[in-house]
Structure formats: structure tokens, C-alpha cells
Amino acid sequence: MLAAGRAAEIRKQYDAALELFEQALSEDPGDSGYQLAMRRVRFQAGQAHVERGLKLRADGKTAQALWNLRRPMPSIPPRRSPSRRCGARGRFWSAKRNSDKS
Image (cartoon, rainbow, N blue to C red; front, side, top):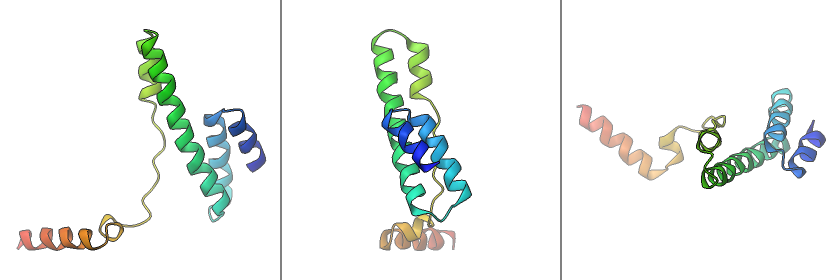
């Protein structure tokens, strides 16, 4: 699946490549190569949809442009809680919220 996903990526078929990489990742969630490939292609797919949407809008095809610009991409689940991800700033705001409740 990794080879097929890379081939689709080379052909700039990002949605197909994303689907293949997600399928490969579901079979082996711990494989960092699959994770990196999926995240890279997710970004490329989103960027391609925005570019296509802007071109369609410039051509006056608003319905098709909206579909591309609003196309939902699967979200990436957070790896850490926001307060841990933000470091000291997150701890400050967590402490402030807790003191405001008192």
C-alpha cells in the first residue's frame, strides 16, 4: 500500500494517496513512515483543493469552488492535552481558570 500511495502522490492524486496511506496506517498504526506519509499527503490534498477552489472561483464556477474550498479533511487527533502542548503558558492559563472558579 505504501508503494501504491507513493505512486498516487507522484501522479498528484492526493485524495487517493491519502486513502491508501490511511489504510496502511490502520493496519500498522505504529509505523512512523505511514504516519509521515499520511500527514504529508493530507497537507498536499488540502492545498490542492484550495488552489483548485480559487481557480474555479476565478473562472466563475462558484458551486464547484465552494465544494473544493469547504471539502472536509479528516482531523488529526491531538497527541497531548493543550496545557501540556503549550508548556508554561498552558500551565498559567490552567492555573488561572482554576483560581477563577474559586
